[in-house]
Length: 340
Image (cartoon, rainbow, N blue to C red; front, side):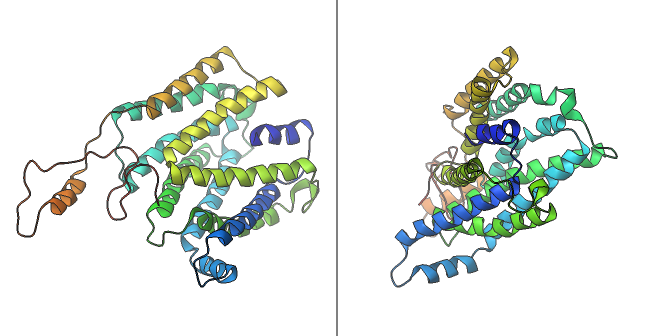
């Protein structure tokens, strides 16, 4: 919905408000809504002002995430100045794999080969589905003086940071010792994003319409939808995981393109239909894969220590429970895809 309305707003109606101002207002909406949700879960002996003050003082981890998102925006800008939008779209599809790689490294999740194949198939399916973008020569126009090496490096760093940011956020909301609620983390993240969007707005001088110029009722709707989308992403990571969020985002690309074709005459070629079907199949293959995975050696060692008493040698036949996808190992261990 957000993608379709944004295209209608700036592509058909030619509205000239700043996209960064829309995102800034969306962050303000998230701050207000999250603060309102926090009021219903304040510990005894605290009031809302002291609770929000505590959250602001403990916001360093979310401020780091906000800084990463800001760096990703800058890298996208640098990349698009040096390579075409078509090449940028091709490289951007590797976010699926970078997220999975960081999930394996940071959260130590184990994925079956069937799931790795499903993710590669998903990436290739999305790549074919977006062929009208990257195959269009007009989208590969590069500004004079552009450097392809700099542009490629920028987009590769951006997709790497994207994968890291998703897993970093998941690790914080699920395993951080402070165990802050999802609304408290959303409040911190929105607060950290606020000055970054202010910086972008100032650097662009409010764009062509000036500061907060060109706003329409549709722009306010987009700001509200953007805020709702950000909150829903956080919830999907908390009660699912980053890979499932990526799968949902990929599915949303297919759905938005179908709606774009139905209501705005966007492209929907036979190749796109086949690629879209491949994406849906890949999502199903990943979601319904039941292949057991092996328990990492370090986890086996920890489990053996728990099963063996003081001075006893662990039995060779000690029961080992295999880790499934969504099982986080180590301290603050998480079984399944949700957490307290």
